[in-house]
Amino acid sequence: MRLVLLGAPGSGKGTQAARLKQHLQVPHISTGDLLRAEVAAGSPLGVQAKEIMARGDLVSDDILLGMLEDRFSRPDTANGFILDGYPRNLAQAAALDGLLQRIGQPMDAAVQLEVDNELLIERLAGRAKAEGRSDDNPESVRKRLEVYDAQTAPVIEFYRQHGQLTTVDGVGTLDEVFTRIIEAIAPVREVG
Ligand code: B4P
Image 1 (spheres, helix red, strand yellow):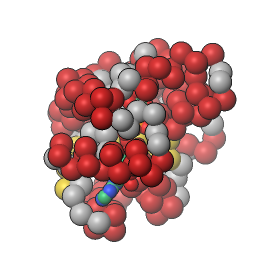
Image 2 (image 1 turned 90 degrees about the horizontal axis):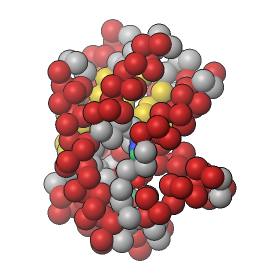
Image 3 (image 1 turned 120 degrees about the horizontal axis):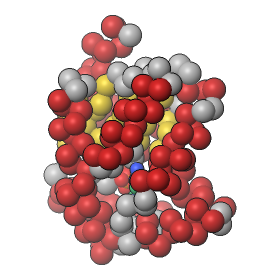
């Protein structure tokens, strides 16, 4: 199963991807996690990404595509994957489409998690307290939501036009949202 999770920061992509990974037995590829690992390792890429991420902007498309190509070259993606955090703009969506076609692994489904802004802000404030992530402060959260509306929201339309989009209500308990996702992808899993 090849699945991409779409949604604003705080919509539950990372949270649900971790559960889906267990359920579907495919790797979870989070570009946010890949970038945070580079930052933690202090690599040249991480040094470049650190400030951009902390202020809530997007890291350059070239860096992301290189990172993703590298990740997809690993054998564990042969039976599918859950992609989380990518694509975040239309250029990334087109690049991903090209990459997946080249490796003969077209996307099966795109799941959009819908959550209103007020609740997103509340969840990210909660994570700021619990985990102290450098980009969960109010100013960066505001910026990330702006970036989402301006650059990432059009990606939803991209997948709708490709007939791959399914929208799920992201408000509810973790179990409730998880069940909705499983139900939403059931038709695609039966075909695949
Ligand atoms: P990400 O790591 O993708 O961060 P995110 O959008 O905030 O979502 P995340 O998946 O972590 O959170 P979740 O909704 O699960 O990106 C961070 C930064 O990396 C970006 O701003 C950018 O700078 C850079 N980056 C990443 N990918 C990039 C790309 N492709 N191009 C350029 N730059 C890129 O959860 C949030 C909180 O909500 C958690 O605390 C969770 O516990 C809680 N929560 C989730 N579901 C809940 C529920 N149902 N009920 C209550 N709480 C819930």
